[in-house]
Image (spheres, rainbow, N blue to C red):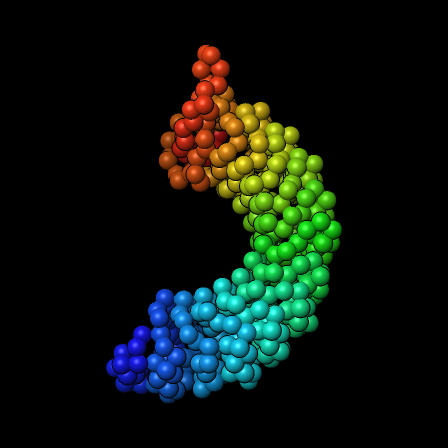
Length: 387
């Protein structure tokens, strides 16, 4: 947006005396032009929701004139850096009403996170905080930990795709787990966790007993971390969504998780794609299929399940209480028509063609043995699997 366009828009905005929400998305807007718009909004005292996702050049822009009224602020993907985050925090320092803050996909780093931690001390009504993909390291996570433990209303916390290791996470997770009793959504996937730090981080989650969504993809949990995590999820009776993609989990770790997850009667989505659970792990997961009646989506892509594993899953689907399953991802699992036939017995023709997650590759089997030809089959699941 150019300065000329902003000058044309400003008079109309000045007439909006009761404007409560403004969205400007995916626009290249100059700082000077945006300043003109903000000045035009000075008389719109009810303005409480501001969404500027995908904008550029917002560093240096001041939100001070209406910052005390804001309850929702979204500046995601706005090329903000540490300096811009610090200036934003200066504008928000007197705000006590903020409930939703999205700064994801910026590059505020630990310096920006530290500045944010200071201003959030006054935003005690905060319910949702998204700082994913913000280049925050251990130092920034430690600063946030000291502040967020006082946010008893916090429900949604996304810190995924940052650069923190175990040191930062082991400071933050116990803090929010002990004090943020309303926390239901936690995503820390894609941080730099490995070996013992991943295991210790998983153990720290034992304080987060009210979780309904847990995201830990790409955290290198391994079997030891999966065992620690199993203790946690077994206590989360409200758990609905668990994302553990790409965590080096073998049949052993899958067994620990399955034993715990089968107690999560509200579970609707389980993602274990990109692990190595194999046929034995698939058999263990059959307990989840049998005992979780709300499960609608199961992601097992690239797990080496094979025909034996699929046959075990099919038997569990037939015998279990889970009649809600509508999405099953079995791509890249070396499944032949033998496995497909086993599933077809459970899903005969699928009278209601609901969308399947993706289908899966099937290696054709001929009289002379397996051929190298593969075709992708879409086998939709009916509204009531097994009926």
